[in-house]
Length: 181
Ligand code: GDP
Ligand code: MG
Image (cartoon, rainbow, N blue to C red; front, side, top):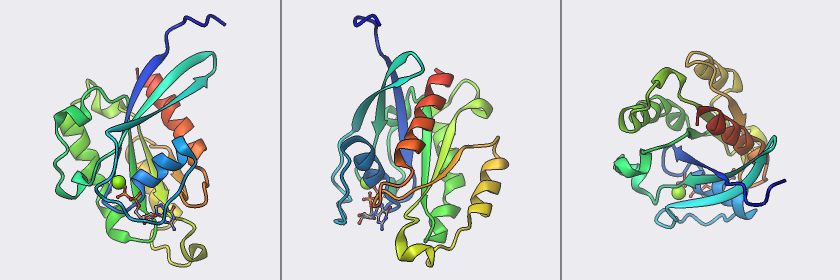
């Protein structure tokens, strides 16, 4: 393999209500770390992860919010040039699922992709570990229906805490981003 071959930079943005686990999922994916502590104001602009997809080397640049999602004021630079948008909700909190359409519309409005219908989203239903799944209020079926009616958005149920499905979900994100690039 040619060591000088340039990596493809893929920009991914992660959206969803405050507290659903966006920062935790990114930390688990990139640093293999989880913290119970709630640090709403902490967060780098983005984290990066290098990976290989088929024979292509890519750098996934994943953008986090530093708590601004509470005010829906993320700024145009945050959305600009995104190759994939990850939507996250908490399977135990119904209103975080109800917010998804708003986040998706907000993204499409701000990022203004050439073909909104074809733009790749990936949905993550996080915190499936809580109470052994007994406190969940959004069923997998309901989430799958939401995805099916929006052009078959890929859906993953995840736990940032237990590191469940996190690599799988972000690999799908990277593939979707690469395909749209
Ligand atoms: P963000 O506001 O969307 O970035 O959410 P955070 O990543 O800051 O997480 C909010 C809280 O939920 C923190 O206390 C995390 O420790 C916790 N949390 C995040 N993901 C999970 C998970 O998968 N399972 C459990 N049990 N807690 C989680
Ligand atoms: Mg956060």
